[in-house]
Length: 393
Image (cartoon, one colour):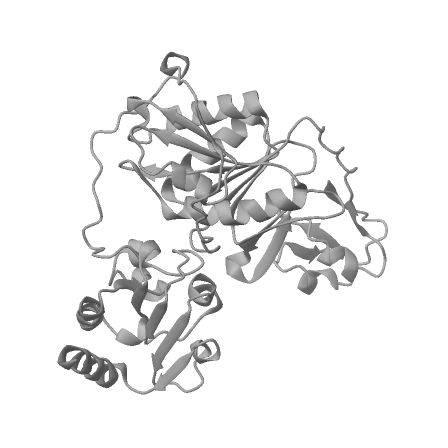
């Protein structure tokens, strides 16, 4: 697929210049010229009345073969404890598998992982458990090799993983080795009922556009999904399934890195992606020291401390606290937004919270459009009153 400009047809009218959203076209000496970096969006082709600009279409790729079946979920663990995102993906994976009338499997790498049977209760028909001391610390080279080997052996049609630091790191490597496509940071997954293809939706252009992507000719179809995008299902303790122990041949995988130590982020008393209550601050706080006020409120509530992007960009608070399109997606029972105007990118990261309380002195702030309760007022007066009331019982 490419773009061609027929200079014989071009009259230099300039209609295509403003049509290009990236400003890549310029009329020089009565002929249009294209700067490198064209995304082939087609806006210029539509704007040209003289058919001087043509976007060459690519022939449709053939559909993948029918030898791949099943939906797989990578069940991430840390220190022997399964992470919440795996259960969220099992709930969505169960829907996808039922639509395709196929099986749902979980894949778990680690050593001495607790509560593996919970993956069956969460919706899996099978769990492929790879238990090996070398896998306890989630070394990416070993996980990549192990997953690639399992995929080649059992041939799943779909592989899902959380868009965590680990998932974002090794899942793309596995996809590259398998020579298949990967859609990162998905916020929506559905099955096209006509083709059976996985429709993978993710934000692009800073969250202003939602793109739906398919992987038509390669298998498996692979996606990483932001934590807290989907809700965990209700565990079915009576559900039956298989736990299949798989041997891991460490000699077949070369680890080029060695984990010396794992350092927890001590600034997170309560982790954002696990919190039932989150207190977040925005640009309205004015300076870094004012986050101490929100820290006090969070402490009283037993909440996690969050932030919109501007305070992180200003260096007021570490990135690990950022909520939004370029931060963490959260879905707590209670989200308290203090001094946050409510950009599209921020609301995309917390808009599914069960109850949203917004505190802002601007009655027209966009955050009030999605807030369950809105308080129009000075946060430096409102928050201390909340803390006083909560402490007094």
